[in-house]
Amino acid sequence: MNTLRSNRFAALATITVASSLALTGCGASAADTGTTTPAGAATSAPAEPREVLLNAIPDEKTPAYAFKVAGGTVPLTGVSDLPNKAVDVTLLQHEEEVGFTMRMDLRFVAGKAWVKFKFTPANLAGLPKLPNKWMLVDESKLSDKTFMETAEESDPGDTQLLVESAAGLKETSPGHYSGTTDLTKDTEESILDAATLKALGEKAKTVPFAAVVDSAGHLTSAVVKIPAAGKTKAQTYTVTYSGFGKTASPIAPAAGDQQKAPAAAYELLNG
Image: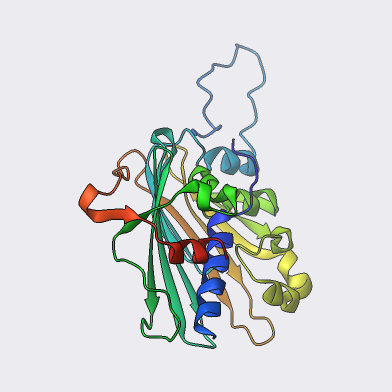
């Protein structure tokens, strides 16, 4: 089981979008252990919902799978294959006040990292001129050395946080679970920003939560129904994990599709 970590993807996107705006001046289920019950012995109780869900969350041994995170502070899509040390992720960060969107594509393969940026609109004054190719990152030029640890994220949707902060969990039908979760435990703001959490007040401690575990014991979805708060409309935070063992593993970009990252790229990455 993976230990609880902050969402590096969300933190990284927050840093880079802030930098770009500044430049412009604007495992298997525990339900079946494979053991038999001795004659006359009491039948063991089924696994608790929390235990089932925690065991279903992807970890460093989980085969390649696709992920999608929607409705949080930083939408994510990608592929994770930690056994083969390969991760592909796309992050989107939108600033409504200035109508600016940054897309950042990251690829980690065998200890190396590549990055791409796309800005919309692309003609904002002050935006750095970056190549369209994958840019190979030199770790020695990063001010934050934990950047490379982004490739170790086994649970990009922070579902472990949701489960560990949950209450009243119950199995409503085979593989389907529901309860509430406490979003005040999200101290890294990977799901909600501080302003929304403050507006929610006590409601943030008992937000409706649901999850699904497939027949192979993999967590396939987690959904949090977040009520309206202050000026923020009601929203849904959704994590989807799919294609376990059937998803193609990310590979290093071809030589002709990559180049060394220029100084402007490190200005964004270093914040």
